[in-house]
Amino acid sequence: MGVTGTGATVWLTGLPSAGKTTIAQALAGRLRGDGHRVEVLDGDEIREFLSAGLGFGREDRHTNVQRIGFVAELLASNGVKVLVPVIAPYADSREAVRKRHEARGTTYLEVHVATPVEVCSVRDVKGLYAKQAAGEISGLTGVDDPYEAPELPDLRIETQDHTVEDSAALLTALLVERGLL
Ligand code: ADP
Image 1 (cartoon, rainbow, N blue to C red):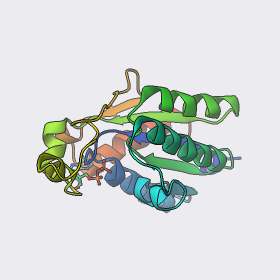
Image 2: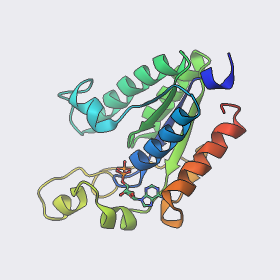
Image 3: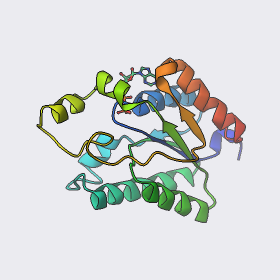
Image 4: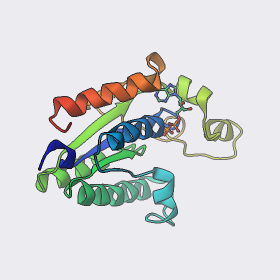
């Protein structure tokens, strides 16, 4: 199997509005253009179907991440490059996903989209930071809910210092370095 058929999971973890989805979509476009099989497992879509009914407490967030990890691993072990722009705030949840990939001999890469909360809350793509500030919601990751930043991610992207294209290029370089492209 050539590199176009080499599967892997690339998990993009970070705060809301950090740029996870934007970078994943930009990379997906590039990869598809080059003939790779790509899936983006979007967090909101997953919560509507696969994780319908789950909330945002620690246990439900963990369960959500394990379900997504399971699907990602299935796809990745069948030659798909799986991009996962999902917050995944807890280190032990991410570690469990990594372990399951390793047990099957499937590549798992962790990318910390490390945009500071001060920048994320100004971007506020979905209006969540404003709602939290207004007291309409609580349990927002990075504000009044935990975010355990990866200590040793495969790549850290500080999006406030880069364009979207630059960010996607950094990720592409990682995939090349790991022999996936
Ligand atoms: P998330 O999926 O992490 O919640 P989104 O990707 O939905 O975040 O939103 C990130 C916002 O930040 C978008 O409006 C995007 O255009 C903007 N942005 C600015 N610079 C970058 C960058 N270098 N990488 C990714 N997104 C960026």
